[in-house]
Image (tube, rainbow, N blue to C red; front, side, top):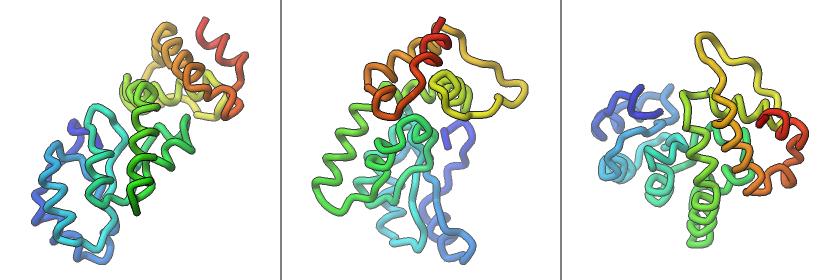
Length: 175
């Protein structure tokens, strides 16, 4: 989770918690990559994941240290790309694929975190014809010009063609 909703536990506490049979995943959100390295070095019996926020910037460092993937919301719009980004690295090719997918989709990743979660993602999903459901109260949709930026990113990345996003919905949502 983003730093606004986290508790930063020291690696010693995480390693102790990893011994509990009901704790299977640590969704890391520390801004200190060195702490993640200390956790990984302790060889915990749990999956180590992080969110896909490009501002937090943990995906590439976590995966390079042996992370197991991401808990992400961007996968609603770029599912194949997030599979590549979230696949544990077995070799240099996995690392390069992650890097390429991360850098190619960086604008989309920034867009999905451009409003409080899940507003930008749900609004863009609805605009391209994907089921997203309504925003919970008191959340409000993003402004039309903000949505237009997300739609432009979709077009620039070719997501409308790749995933069959509804072009008419893209046009009407941006107007």
